[in-house]
Image (cartoon, rainbow, N blue to C red):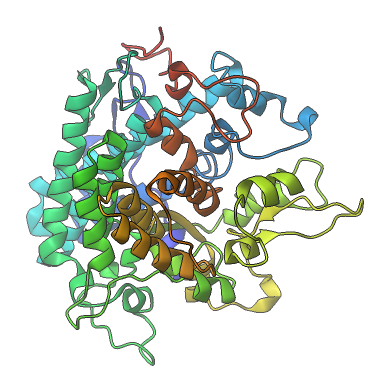
Length: 496
């Protein structure tokens, strides 16, 4: 099963072409493309290739998860001599070689993933007869649309202008097809509308065909366990919905986008739809499960994931960076951990402190590192399905984020406190009643605690237009710092 999910060879080759350097990608030959999509398996493999790309160390397998995007949020301490290049990102010195390489690589990888999705969308309209199973066809098309929207949203959040009161205006290319023609650039608002169009189209396809309307996330995570779960799928490809773009993921991502845009009423409505969603038996579709997951050492909180990636290379890509014996490890200092990250809360109570390794090193000090991505020892003989769905997990959207979205956008202080109490209970904390003046302070603190090493904090600062970041002490953050430069090869730039 692990091989089925993770070790898929990319069967569809794409080549970078001239014009719009990163954007114009196409199959190696027309013959290759036709042979690829003359079976349902060809579509499945092409779609899995998109997830393989998202899992790469240049995207959510590392750089948009734990390292570079987190450096931009001022996260991590390190031995300075080992991270001089990365310091450029912390200092927002984007003209230096390392930041330039990071931004260009991420830009290229996101648009190559978009191109892969576009190839699927082009062929699914031309070869509808190949997939006789209507549910399968709708799911493949919906996921391809969702991937295209998601990757463009990541381009917007990293390379686009600040969403509120921007004085630096940025136009970005929205790639809707694989072509050697120039990809058109769009204003911020038009670019957003294209993302929402694709999200809405994906959601509509999922609404009538997603197995989540017949089974729970847990059942679909374990559909192959016939002894303990009674799941009947016409095609195994319809399993593992938590690890693929799905109906509730689209609701959650739209809530994230609307909050980013400052459209609080829409963000609130979508967040509450997910929080309150029930299945056909009247049970909640998703519940906060911090206590349960942490007790089981599932530190990425997979039970709360609405959308996640399963990544076989997590240990190789990430965990070596936290090795207590390594001179190149990244960490927090004791003060950063207990006094800053957990400001206002006791680390002896809040169970998220249990996600951090507090081992005392040979010098007698503690340099906390997260265990979110810890992998079992090979001698543990962990069940493959548990490994794939519980341990090798990269969260992309968790239910906890929807709680924070709802708290930030609700107009009722009583409701905010009810949500806060539910949320904190699963974090092992008896919540104090918040005043209106305390709400945003706590939300900011919770974003830091909840999503550390998940690549979300920089974008939260950006949408707030924050001039101050925790651990950024030399100067205020400027608008320009929030706008990553487009590669120099692009027809348009977002440089001043």
